Amino acid sequence: MLLLAPLAAFTFSSCGKPADSGETAAGGVVREVYGKMPDGREVAIFTLTNANGLRARVTEYGAILVSMEVPDRDGKLADVTHGYDTFDGWLTNTSYFGATVGRFGNRIGKGKFTLDGKEYSLPTNNDPGGIPCHLHGGVTGFDKVLWSGKTVGENSVEFTYLSKDGEEGYPGNLSVKVRYSLNNDNELKWEANATTDAPTVINLVHHSYWNLSGNPQIPINRHQLQLAADHYLPTNAGLIPTGEIAPVVGTPMDFTKPTAIGERVEADFEALKFGGGYDHAWVLRKADGLRLAARLKEPDSGRVMEIDTDQPAIQFYGGNFLDGTVAGKGGVKYAHRTALCLETENFPDAPNHPDFPTAVLRPGETYSHTMVHRFLAE
Image 1 (tube, rainbow, N blue to C red):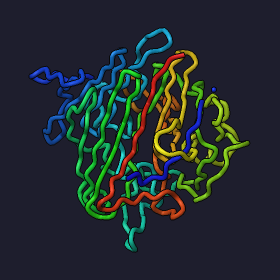
Image 2: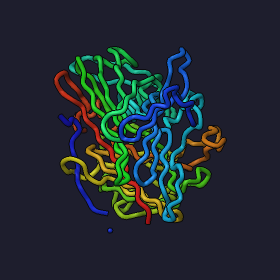
Image 3: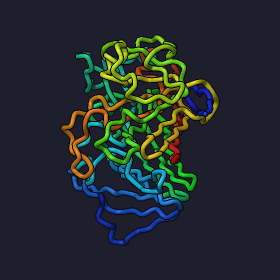
Image 4: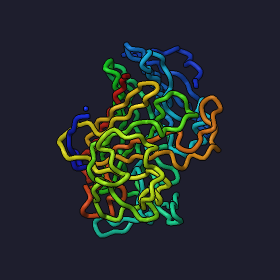
């Protein structure tokens, strides 16, 4: 059962220590020991490589995409994600680089919602504009826990996690599965599903930071973005949706045609001032099942990433809060707007807006979310 309303189609014109067994699983997946949790539990990392040389590395910690190596127009491979070289680095991750976030990705206003007449209070771990909210599952969300990983099928890895009743204030025991698959059409698929034993709310989100230039020191302003969205969700100063669904036409929020991200990011427009740039949810055109939601191109390298999804919205975040204080891969300090996120999802703060697609999951139902990243070069 897909709980989040489907939307519309459109057409666009490090390295762990090897395990003692040196285990290579079905489909060419390689499993290695990546490190240990502070309590001593071992953490694995899996490398998926396709016939074209694309390589994805995913780890049990946070069900994180550690790196994604894709070719430019000349066939040169480069990692196009922000993150860390070592497991110890990932333990310091406060930006949600590459992570699976939940139970509820994005924001819940004031950290409160009411379900079946009962009010629930969640930790408030973010305060844009000085207004507290609950962000990405709370203080210890799914990005900061150890999942259990195993290879499944061809070139796929599945992570499982049981979120217990009351964890971060959420009701119900939630059983979650996330699967990463890399095929020979250069598609990295992220699939999430979950079941619960009591009514709860859910919005699982994949949160990679992308810079298709392959150079993490270059701002993403020249990236050209197109979104299958004629509307976006205006917010208050705390980046919580007001409930309005506003048209993008005639505003800097219009990405219905390929547009350089930096072209209007500093425009005198309320939404951009609230977010310090782009940090909003766009309402995708309605259609059943998977359909193209976004197309991103970096003109110098020729790298292109297309995103398919079955979700009703996509959050475009332009790396506005990166400030050069976090040292990532290769010791690079990630500066302002050197990466962007394109997160398919339900609407932010959906539990507090009856008119938004429902985020409620009940016993006997299955939450499902599929996101496909397709890599090309032009």
